Image (cartoon, rainbow, N blue to C red; front, side, top):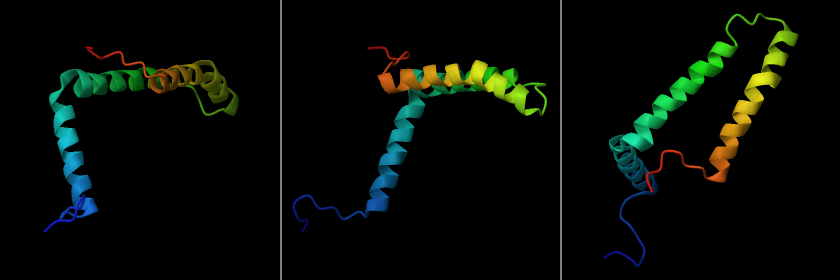
Length: 90
């Protein structure tokens, strides 16, 4: 007999099962998982092309870091922390 609020499954088994269910649900939802993955890949390529043929000098890397990467990352983090959900259908 189970106690109130108890479970026969271990914590790791519960975590594994919930993670598996969550992954299945996310992979079925095109707007949530696949489209977001494509957008992240495109953003990664865009940021990567900024550093193409930069050189190895400290000043050239620092200038690009301050000029391009910080504002982009700041805006992405601000959208994430602010709860802006661009892909939401609600």
